[in-house]
Image (tube, rainbow, N blue to C red):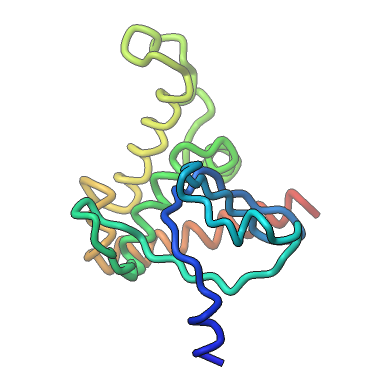
Length: 165
């Protein structure tokens, strides 16, 4: 089987240009330079199935292996995403973590270009205070803060489930 796959393999460089998900699965759109599109791929029927191997290319033009992110690194990114989430901000207000007036943008216009940036900053400040950290990056190594984040995240998930049912 390996030899069959090797013989049928075409190699080309592509750029990830779009990714989305719906009930049917994940969709990945790759942009291939017109001079690099393999003739075999052009001739294949629509809905042709492929074995796929992807290898990222580093700045040095060599294969760059994937690095598995730690739970802490994942949570740092997640906390940043949640700070921008209107849904998470509504949860914080509903759960009485933040007063609704704290999101009042009347006095923020001189400092923040948009109300979304102001609300994100208020949420990020809350998270730092609540988790007793000075930066989200501390979630990588601060076990107490990580545990408190997990508790807050669970509470948020329960809130989301309750409002949707």
